[in-house]
Image (tube, rainbow, N blue to C red; front, side, top):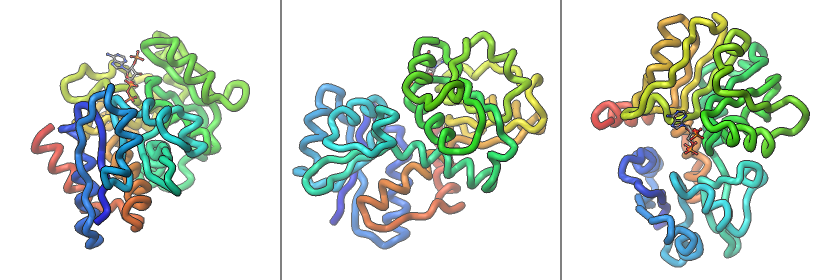
Length: 281
Ligand code: ATR
């Protein structure tokens, strides 16, 4: 029986076990996907030992993504670029790491907006500069969008992100937090990749009245599903993309690696997670 895990600290609120549990049942596989609470000090040893403990691999979440990147024996090119790993597996005795958040975010945009959405997107504004923001920027860079502007409360982190990920002059540029309002009228896609708007956190304070009528607003927060930012965007008639799809789509490549079946993100799966979020936010 194949075993996989999600390792984090804390881990009890993660919805990933529900996602993988749904697929294991749906595809009739006898595997398991276990929640493991691993303290930061124990994580490097865990990366060395998980195969001996009978795991084929697993997901890594807050706060271990960077340690997983450092502790893996080999990494995909994407994980190298982001310096963060969220998916681990073993190949020929070596621990490999990938970052599937990139694919997760982009697959969800494609599914929500339809293929070819980039044609009407020139300038993107990414708010936040943490691990999730890096995945968002790296995904967008593979598409024919023009400029990617990154604004973060701590400006040095936005500068560092732009330095690490920029592939040519001007494609990724950091922007002072207090100038967000000034660029808003000229952006086509706005992505919140901070934790603002999450249950228990203050909302992202953004006055969308200055935004273009064709602007798209995406959030990576999925608890609640309709964040104050998305509600404000909807009230103004803007197109919105919620954060749950990224969670669902990032899970698929890992499942395929460990269990050998490429799973589908279906409306049923989404409904299951939505009802769980509504029950216990
Ligand atoms: P993740 O891996 O989910 O991206 P992270 O690396 O801790 O998590 O990043 C969290 C992001 O949310 C950061 O951009 C953070 O801004 P700072 O770099 O200034 O900390 C942003 N964030 C969290 N709380 C915030 C707040 N109250 N106001 C503005 N930004 C906030």
